[in-house]
Amino acid sequence: MKSGTPTKWTMLKPMSHNHSQAQYTKNSQKPTQLPHATHSLANTKISTEEWEFLLEMLKWPSPTIENPTPTEATDPRKCTFTVLNWKDNYTVGDFVNVSVVARNGRGVPKTYGGDFFQAKLYNTELKASTFGLVVDHDNGTYSVSFALLWPGPAHVSIRLIHSSEAVQVLSRHRERDPDKIFFTGYFEDGDIKENVVCNAMKSPRLVGDGSRCCCEYRDPRSGEVWFCRRPTSLPCSALVYHSMGGYQAQLSTNESKILDRDNTNIVLPGSSPVINVFAQHTDIRETKKCVSGLKTPVPSGFFFKDHWTSLVCCTRTFSKSDVIRCLTGKQIHMMGDSTLRQWFEYLGKAVPTLKPLNLHASGRSGPLMIVDTASGTLITCRAHGLPLRTNKTPMADLHYIANEIDNLAGGEHMVIAFDAWAHFTTYPLAFYVNRLAIIRRSVVSLLQRAPRTLVIIKSANTGFKDIYASDWLTWQLDCALRAMFQGLPVVLIDVWQMTSCHYSPEDIHPASIVIENEVNLFLSFICPQ
Image (cartoon, rainbow, N blue to C red; front, side):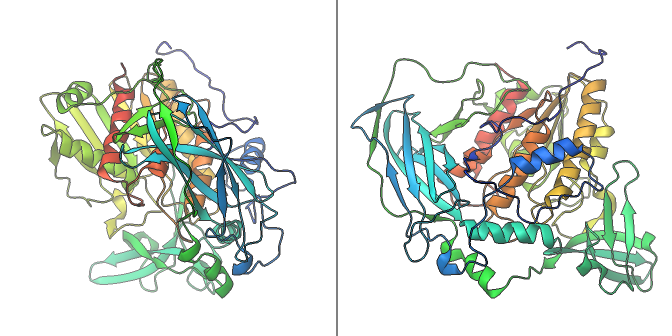
């Protein structure tokens, strides 16, 4: 692509549901729906066609029982799985198929789908694992397909993250109650100080009786809006700081029992037969160059001896000297949440020549900066703006991603990396899609004025399991993000599959060995072989 040439890219349009967008597919025999979805396009910066496509793509089977009891919900301890057509020996490159039967608390097989399972193939001794594609047949049975990617024994693990009944609760509260988490706005004028409740939507709980509603903060460039209750003694212009407020989900007793931890994120009982895999002479590693626009297959790679081998493109492991050479003359701007900040922190520790500059800002939300003057390397990191669950932070330091991108000239020396998901799980789908549309507009503009700029998007990762931030809520946002940026010359780094199949304890902030592999994948796109 020549610099200065007008460029048009194909944006999202209806298409068949393909595995590059989502790692959990539905094969439904009856109409499904996105429960309680916000179908209004008001204030959403996408076309009707695109919105309808997203809703169709994210449809999820609902329980056929009205107001199911906890006993009627799927019980992971009663579910079973079977390795189909098991053989004594397999070869690297073969596939293994597994059948899963969901049962309720009484042990009765379910007759409808919608359970959210995660599946992996693993070998503990070899520190090897890969992600398995789950297919929902919408009748209480599920299929899982595993690629055999390393020589040696392998075992199957299936986890029920949420029952279909729990997913129904999560979806309902996502669309109806954006105030499950609230924020605090700090207003100051001299010695006069006042704290009020703030949030991203003018919802009934924020508005209250209407007597103190509301200060509205509309960003003139992006159009993003933030609301705070009106202080009693100070003007709206006196808002100085922002912080996380608290948690206030309103669940019924039945809903709380259905979401109970005892039935969440549970490995299905039993043990699979050992799958013995023998080496083959053909190298299965991907040889494609790591460039923008590549699709993400399932599986996208596998761990072996704690090293991630990508099946997207030809990646490599970077030593400290390799990182310095790779980043020489580069400007890298990271914008997102704390899971992206882990990349920034990893690079700061791994490369001694990268020195931090004290910008007197929050260590969590930034802005943060490390530089290597000898190699001409600059790396910045900052939060993606509101909404943001963080400690007390100056409002002036919280910039929206779209505005940050609009302020950059771009060029072949520049890398922009961003993510946005962990702080959006409590809001209706339309709210998140609107944020993505605003960011996408800025990315398109950037690539038109500076097409050699490298734009990298980090996917969501696993780790959340409750009403405020469940893996199912995260997965829905992640699918929307992939779809919204499909067709653009950007890089999507899939860390969902990596975090889902790794042996480290579940955590929204992946273990250091996982971050090391994520960063190696990131650097492989900056400096491809």
